[in-house]
Length: 488
Image 1 (cartoon, rainbow, N blue to C red):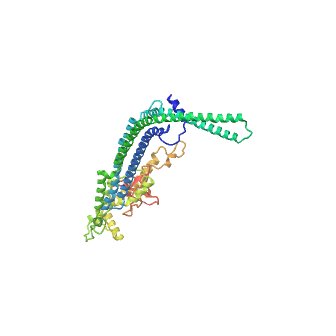
Image 2: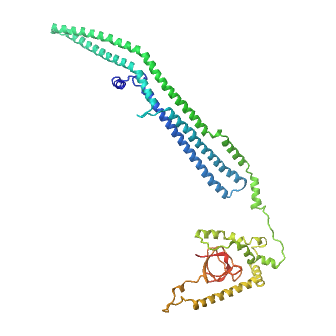
Image 3: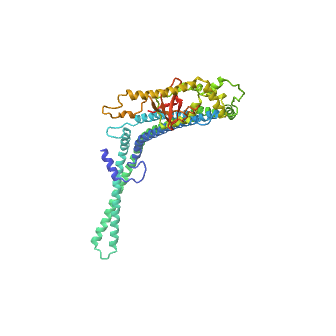
């Protein structure tokens, strides 16, 4: 019955104003309950998006700090200013951690708080909608029903009264027109007069009924207002709780977002300012002067008496002892690695000579150096050993060749044809190798090459770590075995 009332009220009554008291206008207040549930979803989405922004910002700060900390450490900046510059990246890392904490608080506290409140405040029905919306709808409908019924009756009588007044006016108009017509039949005139009188009586009768209906409606109005106010107040109380809760949540969000009140956040910038203030220009310049500039110590040249021991300390065989620990074998290098080896070869070669750098002058005359080396060659048994190695390697090569010709069962087949394996070089005699470092021959019987050059190893390594080899140009000589690697 309630449903039928609502339908008829919607059809019969045209809303004359936008007042809450008009029939059906309470629906806006009912709809506000559904809007409250939707606003809970909107607030949760808002908090969730802000949490994702905080997380993304924290990740970007961390990546930025890591990248620029490496750039600063590898860059040319030095001293206290380098520490001040690095402090900026440290600040970013700490702020990143705080923003991750903000993200966690937004999701674990604020988001969950709204979610739980929504679950407690809005109860879904099996048929759809919310229980709170249904209760408000039923309450308003029940409060409006008596007054709406009286309003409907009054409106029906009002329409009948207006129709009677219209008929009365029409009857009077016809009577007046008949009076002006001289040919009007008296009997017809009498009927028009009776019609006017009857219409007047009908108007008076319906008018009294209309007034009475309006009086009854007025009597119902106070009760109607009271009932509607009661339901409306319940809706207001529900909305008041929602508004107060939203305000509380927003204050919590503000508290979590406002890092300026966080002691850790304030401490980060306090420490950053102190670190930057500690940057000392004079100290940095002094450090550079002592470590890279005019303040460095120098072993200035002094007069030294000549001795055999001093000459031998400059020889390559004494220098070789420092390179025994960096023998490299069985390594495959790409072109990029070979380029890096070439780039750093000078630093690798300079390491064995570090013990004699203080007494070695690169600006000595070439003639003097050649004289010292020649004298060393004649006086040192190592030079004789090298000559023996050359003769020994040559003899071994000839012996191996003759043995191979006489003892190799694969040299010819039964038909007298040559063995196809003869074309492959024997790895025990000649092996292709590649230079790992630059080497400058110190004597006439030594080879000179650059890192990455290819040469042919002839014979085996001797006890002192020297090999005989041939360059691509055909030059044959000795070279240190640990300066090359076999080509796989």
